[in-house]
Amino acid sequence: MIRKILKWTGISIASLIVVILIAWVVFYIKVTNRQNKVYNVTVHKVNIPTDSASVAAGKRVFDMKGCGGCHGANLEGHTELDDPMIGRFSGPNLTKGKGGIGADRTDLDWLRALRHGIDKEGKTLFIMPSYEYYKLSDQDLGNLIAFIKAQPAVDSDLPEDKLGPLGIVLAALDKIPIAPAEMIDHQYKPRTEVKKEVTAAYGEYLSMSCSGCHHPTFKGGESPVPGGKFVADISSTGNPGKWSDEQFITALRTGKTPEGKTLNNAEMPWKMTQNYSDDELKALHLYLNSMK
Ligand code: HEC
Ligand code: HEC
Image (tube, rainbow, N blue to C red):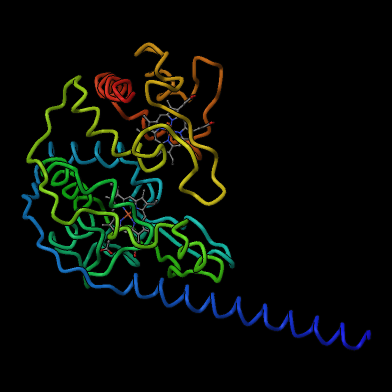
């Protein structure tokens, strides 16, 4: 009797392991196929200026979009996560220095990355949130690229990106953005320029940086980061709907909310929003309050 139980327990465990292995292999194939898909896109030409005013305007876009959080303040690159189970990924060194990709990227390559989320070969970038940038106006994007190209070379070699065994599962379940190119409308017709004034339209343009975490409805909910903090409602029905513009500005510059909460920059990137001007924050507040 005991032998029989042991035998069947053994068979059950072995079958379970086989099922898990098969599921993992299926996930692996699916994820690899998504990463190897080649996107044939028509890249819309953008003028990349070189004058110092445009480069300075580009630095503002870089700071307002929080690029430095992943690519480093000097564009030297930064390892974001290094976990044997989930994987390892870094924002690459964007300069022309050793270990940097800047030396062999053309204007077309920069546009491909930021407008379509794809690399030189037309394959999706990994993790890089281009889906939050592709709607940037030609002017803002041109300035941003001008800024990147104007930065001094920094030598910084980073280890190669890879997905760990758990990372494959999380990627297959769309808990990690492994294929940003899938999240982009490749036919999108970008605007030449956006009027920077206190209007809900400008607020909507700026809110591209918020919808990835706060969801397109801005009602908050589950975090896009595995195990990340629950994201707050920032539409008219959330706390910011009750705040004055001044309170909204203080919260997004200092991380201190009128309710006495201190926002943690690692969860809610207020060090990014502290780069927004008063008018930019007012425009955002106006737009968010229009979300019923
Ligand atoms: C959440 C982290 C993160 C943020 C924020 C981020 N990036 Fe990236 N970026 C990455 C990662 C990771 C890669 C590497 C992707 C790959 O090699 O597949 C990357 C790659 C790139 C590339 C290289 C594309 C290529 O041709 O290989 C460029 C250019 C780039 N990012 C620019 C930017 C700019 C500009 C911003 C801000 C507007 C930005 N990134 C914000 C993580 C990030
Ligand atoms: C990386 C994800 C992420 C991004 C990007 C992000 N947020 Fe948040 N935000 C959060 C999380 C998580 C919280 C909740 C923090 C907490 O509860 O401590 C939050 C909280 C807030 C709060 C406080 C709400 C309250 O009730 O106290 C405001 C206001 C806010 N976000 C505005 C914005 C705006 C505006 C943007 C875009 C410019 C933005 N956030 C972008 C993750 C994000």
